[in-house]
Image (cartoon, rainbow, N blue to C red; front, side, top):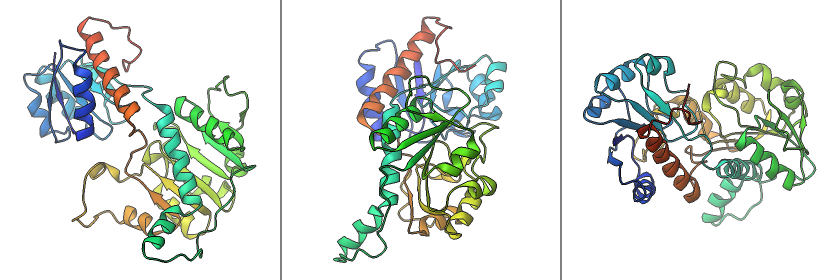
Length: 329
């Protein structure tokens, strides 16, 4: 199998090259450019494409891939809201993903955002570098004994529940499907979670039911001084409503690893550019907000798991295994 690999970063190539040693029947051609209508044309002569969270896989791209003979789309991530699944099915293209590469990595990053934003560690770091050792503006809350509200208790959300429990927090959660292994968690309705939680962490997939789940109405249900963390998908939070809530002093702190406008520049170095998106620029201006670059997954262990599972998916497709649990249907 020949795979064309889009949006390649140095850490992708290192982990996949290591994994390829165990898959002699597979070869990879790496491309720096991400997948869109223009770059989809380069897939001719390959058997599969490997894409990531912000790759464009709409009906137009799917049709180009199919016309070029692509039979398999390998998503090296868990999410697939950027994929037109019906279009792929209509063109007989199989889509496979990596559903659980390292839930602990993302959950640990979520707690890192919560701690850093809460205690203003990002501000303290900059102040001390300028020889300013004043404690003004650095006051946070003790998380021990507080209530953590976890929205979504899949693998990542469950890991976050365990972390919060380890901090001595009371953990409540909202999910249509209860995780029986979390015997210390109290499941409640979303409105109750929003009203009771001191820390709210989002770990649900993006679909029609969760698009702008956090909006002006749900923000108004939250406690004053709440900490909000999103490491899931940007569009779960209505950014305009979030900014209004920050300005209205609703939030003590906000930590975002994902955001609505990230598609054009996430994972890219734009140090010499001026951000053209005013909403993201406004988020970056608030002293109680930390924004990171969709890096929750980025650990050595997660990268190894992503590369191995992706190539195992390719091998399963080669062998005709249509029962793989990683196939998106």
